[in-house]
Amino acid sequence: MVVVPLRLHLSFTSLPRQAPRSPLGLMLPSHAPRSFFSSANKPATALGPPDKDAILNGTPPANSAGEDSVALPAGLRRELMPRHVAIIMDGNRRWARMRGLPVGSGYEAGARAFRRMVGLCCNWGIRVLTVFAFSSDNWFRPKVKKVQLNALWEILFSTFLVETDFLMRLFERGLRDELQHLMSAGVRISIIGDVSKLLKPLQILLADAMETTINNSRLHLIIAVNYSGQNDIVQACQKLAVKVKDGLIEPEEINEFLVERELETNCTDFPHPDLLIRTSGEIRISNFLLWQLAYTELYFAHSLWPDFGEDEFREAVCSFQRRQRRYGGQKS
Image (cartoon, rainbow, N blue to C red):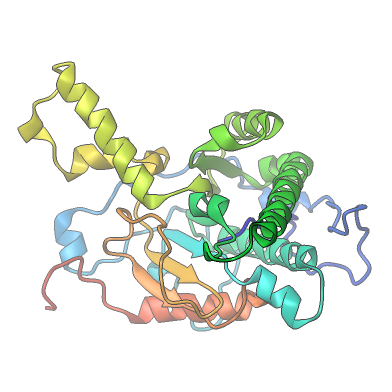
């Protein structure tokens, strides 16, 4: 898993052929027509988790009002749209190598795909989008055999550190430039993962982005940075252990609901993704949202992330809408 630099343009219209570019080669932001965001700051309808009967009967969750202003692509049904979509954005480096381009070009192309995805989620009425931007496991790359020469290890590891530092700084620059557009679009930002290892200026910027957008309700964008699904469960158990030690709860009172309240996804009313998408043909979840994906529908696309656009997303959602979700219940 690799970082996709956050570079959003939320007008949801086609980009001009010769849009201005920054010195880094990324698309510079342009102001979106206000009409797209006219309902951006309307309060969201309270949509708690569906009750058990509704789940077992396969009743789809209702989306909030005011989402019918944008027509859905043919074949999609609004009443069956997933409320929470999670994406493992994989394939940026391979995309660049296949074209003989620098790795950075793959990240930039991935940023454009990410920008498209945020726009599509806003327009299609999806409530939560969680993206795996950087895994805690990435700090341990590249993996080489111990029998290899130390000099080779030093070269590879130094290259990795330079690339990681570049990506983090690119992520910081993109978020700083686009924060106002996210506000205008009604997008709320939350960060999950251990941000303590990030550069201090980036930590401050992320905290500011979360505070600035906390009242937005059109789309909840959750960015997993330095995140581990295993660590998420461990830290939740540690918090519960402290509560037991302090006499706040009894061990026998611990259940799945108390665990879930301590997970990092407690920032959203919809912590369980309805649909997980992974690009690049890989068929695994790579330590992402391990608890939260218990009943999630999985979709593995062959497209590399930079090539994953509206048509590919529509096909993923169509596949989701054709499935009968049972949540452990029996088919009626």
